[in-house]
Image (tube, rainbow, N blue to C red; front, side, top):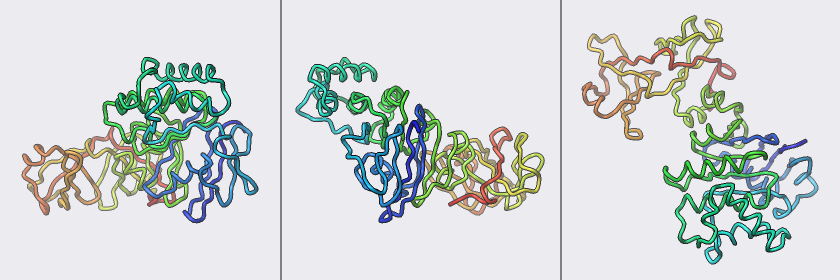
Length: 346
């Protein structure tokens, strides 16, 4: 088959993951630390030999139960967290190193390097020394270096995690260019990066795939505890009604038309910044159970519901743990859907 088809089994790390990546598709592999993401990348790159399974890339078997193709013969480009450029070589020489190592002449290698630098908008940096580059520039050079060998598969392993916010967007633009026209596997903890680059998302927990689908399906309707945390959404269990859902603790969440039959187990998802928090002085509301600082906001938990508000807003309400409050979520901010097996995984 074209693209990538892999079954990765590494018993010592308790990893058993199957995934496919289409010819012109970017698949994001997400999961908590220790879930097995790096193991998958290492096996695909030829850095770890699996105990069982196969890796087939563009119809060519790179690994099976009998043999494994060495890393340098796999035609795989890797962009990791750190660029790790050769400090004593120019930018152009760094990018030309890959083509030269696989047999290109010096002239051909420099030509490939210039093309790759131009593709990521970094040709003007060709004569610079790596030590003079910003973090974002250095990572774009790392992307160009991966492109210069015309890889059949591109592996992106946390490619922007070491960068500041300002540099991330320029590198993401370079990554989008690099991923076009080839199968790409992206490992990331950045929801913006996943939504911007990936066509599909595969969620791995404890060495197993627990969910997969489009970014909208996996992050907009999370079926695993990790995907809910990753997307920043709150998921609330309950039973569907015609106009939304009754929560497990007896509350109600209104929602536009949804496909879950009334009475069925359901999950409601919403972003906690969309919820509205008010005082409840008549005692008929919810008990405020916990108050936590969170990313410059205050997270309030009351029963099954969660709301994030600014510190100023929270202070103005004069609420404390044990008080009663009301949390209202606008109907157009709530998605109601059926969970796997009637419950969220994780």
